[in-house]
Length: 150
Length: 150
DNA sequence: CGCGCTGGTAGCATGTTGCAACCAGCAGGA
DNA sequence: TCCTGCTGGTTGCAACATGCTACCAGCGCG
Image (cartoon, rainbow over all chains, first blue to last red; front, side, top):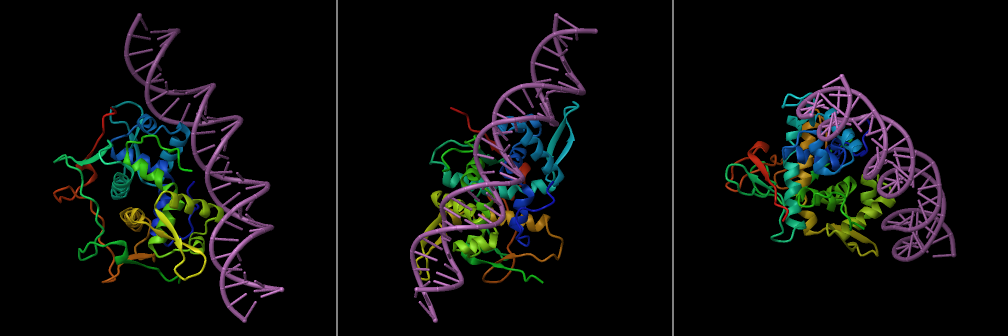
């Protein structure tokens, strides 16, 4: 039932993304999906979310094309939830949130889960916003080009 | 009153970020701050959010150190809300959400607000997740290194 | 000194969340 | 075959959060 958007500045891609994801639980579900969770129970245990909420979120994520519901890979009669290409495209969003959290909400040395490069086992390089010709950009180097309402 | 976290997998930086931001409105407030909004009324008109909600969100963002409340720059007795360095560090998060929205929730050619490089006026390069040694990484190239609960 | 603007509060209806209980299908064991 | 436990839900209800509307206080200008 995501027919009506909650945020009416509909020309802004950020608002549409936010509306498409739905809520924070959905984002954490996506994070868990990146971390390898596939089954209802895995998400439920990992998140500690109420089952009815999880049911609803999984449904809207599937309806929104972020997750797909596929037959379980272990041959059982159950289903699994896997990221679609559109869901995988959320990777930079999750990484950005992760890096911001690492930076500002952990004391130095405090243990936390880490996202590492599978080949080298090293932590990732911080995300960088770059211009079309490759210069690093800070917020002040950018401007929002508002579209005329015509 | 963000004393208690809503998400208990507290070793995950993503969860902490999500908890620190609070809700989607807060994220859109931050987006507007990047776009140049500073005054209560600007946020309110831009977002269409109820004023009591906006009041609460601005307060928690200030309490969380994402925004700072400073005397108005025009000399009036009012206050303005500006991003702190911690708030500015959310830039990649907003850019990532924006790019995902542009990619998946607009028809080609559909008008929308654009974030451009101020110097060249060009749209930004898509964010790229890279390893420490600079290789581009897809989700499958990474793994979450869960921390032992000791 | 009156009026409008900004930046809020207060009260209330409604919607959403979360908890707990319940339930159906499948699987394995005795 | 029946018992038992696990997975993946659904349902009902109480509590909380949201959003709307009305109201209000301080500033600033004429």
